[in-house]
Image (cartoon, rainbow, N blue to C red):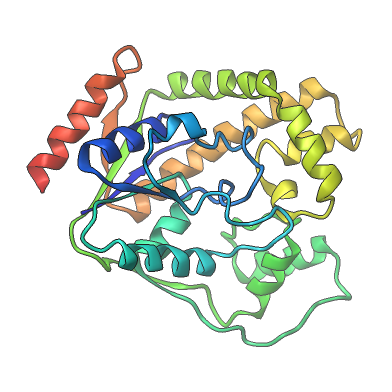
Length: 285
């Protein structure tokens, strides 16, 4: 059986995945694009060692912050693990819908059309060309590598919604929008209390050109503060705002791209939510 635990940032995916892994004697595969990277811990809300409860957690901390890691890389790595653990219960956990689609669906990549480096164009000019080619692009305008890759491709990847594996169950956690936004806001405050500023300072000093640091929510905003673009309080508010917007995009992706069974989280009694999910899975399987 393959489970995928999805939903917006901060909703409770990590806790549910660990409880299900204990119950079904499974392993957990990371499906969060930032948690791939070593030392990006506080800002990505990465699962802590004491929270793992002895469950194998794979595809966490596999790249340094100055290394590149693509969706295709994730597809290759995730599918290799699925094959390696065939016959065992596997739980994907994370909010990066593109990673899950690439790993579990018939998601095919085109080869690059050419090797144009576009050295004569600024990032803004590259972004304008990408927008003209792909009006709905979600590529960050500062992510030069992805902008160039998009321009060099014949087309965007082809996705067949058909699952490549049998017995795939996609569980989504959700809550009322106001409640979620309150959780996100408090979570950001908690990250700063736990040392997010020092984490980013240390990483930015060591990896000043890191693409993930300059694009990941929670890191790029603090870097803006460190570069004196705005105050620390403004950085905090930007993280909260960008996290809320990201949560909206996550809902849109999972509702439009994947067949998700949603569960409203009971934060007063999370065990009740866990049992509801277990009962559903047991019935389906």
